[in-house]
Amino acid sequence: MENLKTKVITGLVRFSYLHVWEPNAIDESQDPKYSASIIIPKSDKKTLKQIKQAVENAKIQGKSNKFGGKLPANLKTPLRDGDEERPDDEAYENSYFINANCKTKPGIVDNDCNKILDQDEVYSGCFGRASVTFYPFNTSGNKGIACGLNHIMKLKDGEPLGGRSTAESDFDDDFVFADEDDDLL
Image 1 (cartoon, helix red, strand yellow):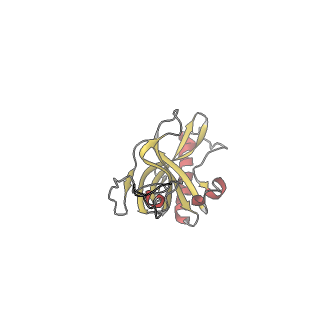
Image 2 (cartoon, one colour):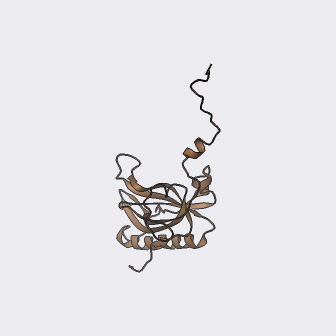
Image 3 (tube, one colour):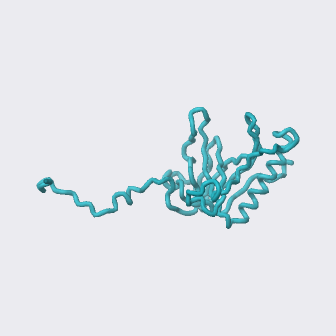
C-alpha cells in the first residue's frame, strides 16, 4: 500500500486565499495553519486526472487505517467545482479548486527553484504550480480526504484577488495640490 501515489505536482494554477507567509486560523478555536486555495482550470485534464487518482489512492489507504475497513457513504473529498460552489467569483469560473494547508511553512520558489523571500512577490491572484499530498482523515466523526500543502512555485503575476487595490491605482489621477497661497474658498 505504500506505493500508492498521493502526491501531485500541478500544472499552471492560480492561488487564492493565500496564507503562506504566516499561519492563519479562521477562528480562535483552531490551530493556525499555512494554506492556499488552488484554482485549477477545467482544461488542465492532466492535473485533474492526477488529483482524482491521488484521492482514490488516499481512500484506499484510509479504508484500512482510518475508516475501519470500509469507505463511509458521506466521505468528504477535496476537489470542488468552482462553477457550482463559487458561481459569483469569476476567479473560480471554468475551474476546480482544492484547499490545501499545512502546519509547517511551505517552500516558496520561483521558476528557477530559487527561494522567494519578498512577501509581495507571492500573493492571492498570482499563478504557479503547487506540490500537494492527499491523505485520509477521521476526526470527531468527520471522515474524508484532505489536501496537504507541500510547496509552491510562482510562475507569473496575475490580478490581485481579494478586492484590494494597489497604491499605484489609487493615486493614478491628475491630483493638483493647492499652494498655501491659493484661496481655498
